[in-house]
Image (cartoon, rainbow, N blue to C red; front, side, top):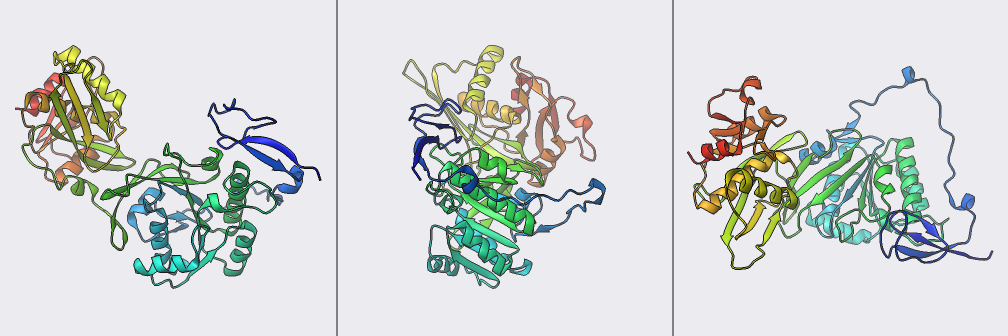
Length: 450
């Protein structure tokens, strides 16, 4: 049969007959790759079996059908454990610990049934060497170096695993397609087969996904829609702490956060991250404040460090690490307009200690206190926590789950809590002692340095 040539966008799968620099569908540049079609679409697709129609009242829910992974931090992000028949996609930068944590999980799942670890990037001997370094016994663990999805299906029929780990999805391919592994068509077809196999056989599946230089999952965006749960490893492999964040979860809360630490024998979980992040904090230090951010259902206390220094240049520098840059600039404008605190002649540097990324607006109060402390060279009250969103008119707005944040702070020994007005009166079971309510940013700064 004569080959047919087309060009396919590797981001969204859009096809054209000639090469284009910019994809008209997803607006990305230089993503088109030449593809050869030798078979009809009906020959290259997956043969689907018709689904079974059931009455809604006859369907038995699978509540409680979860498999503990052996790591409470990972179970937290998953919503209580791995759901049978679910597909979890785990992404992160190279070398951050995706394969390590999944091999450690595979070693702890021996009581749940056979575990099949499929590697497309290493040999079985390399996996064995890594497992011995991690101290994994390997009872009930089967390892296969395979990239052909048809062969993997045969191995599943033979072993009947309870959990399967695929490392990585970009290396797998389906023989019926002429495109190479990692392309849009291969990833879509292979993922569809894996999802169908997991649902029919009630197999819990972990898939490793590569990320691009921008930090997003490589392959089509459809990949994240096809799976049940998407987890991202945040941070740098050179840092002490790594954060596992859930950005999608059909069986639990999204944006849950798990904290791990890379050590000699693999990743270890940090069950009390607030205490760890504040362990190196020095008291009565200029330019630092403590705030409480809610990551999923967990309150997390972190330290915000600010440095304000005069500059000789016309355009002062503004740098942030772990905070939204645009929100920091907006907050500085509010301080100048409402409080008369001018920062235009100063360089401003802000970071969150521990490598945490904070997206909640409730950390505004902590950021403002850190900036004011560094500018005036005045230390903040060492046992105070600042919670609140700052509006454009300088008011401090209410936040959700204030009780959880205060309880976490009291557990760690903090005595003062600067919170939005009427926050303390709406809390149940918490003493109002040490809780200072403020209506404006000016009142909050007065309470912080009194």
